[in-house]
Image (cartoon, rainbow, N blue to C red; front, top):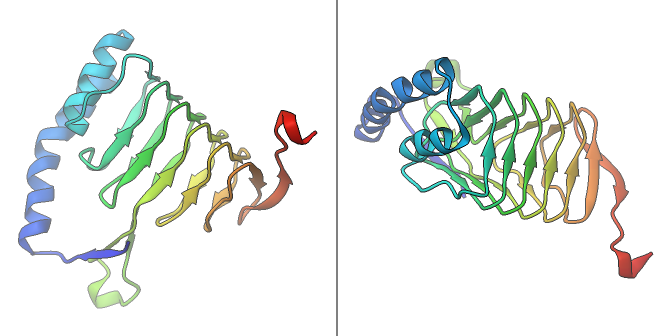
Length: 182
């Protein structure tokens, strides 16, 4: 569901207040030496949600907001991943995210005079999905259960469950067959 946020509104000011809290936490996270328990604790502060002990997150970790990032159980997030999460990013259970992946839930309006205004569209990554290294997921996309996004792909449309997509823009490469279908 798309929503908008305009520069200079109360909602925009609230975002800036949360950023003032979260950006120092992200800097602390990325400039210190931390074990997985400490990483999960700091990211729990950033997201304002408990990160499950089965989840592993490699540093550096980047987020432009943090409070609209929702991470499931037994998730692996590799180093250098960027979450632009103001519009909402929902990561299911058992998801694998490769290094340097970008997931964006925010865009800008096209009109130059109002370009700082934001268009917010949530991104959903369902259970058991795998995003390869350097993949980009754009606002409003849904990645289906068990789907694989190839390394370097730019995903601009929904990805069906049990499929492999790749390329720029991403397109269907293969349907994944389960053991019972082979």
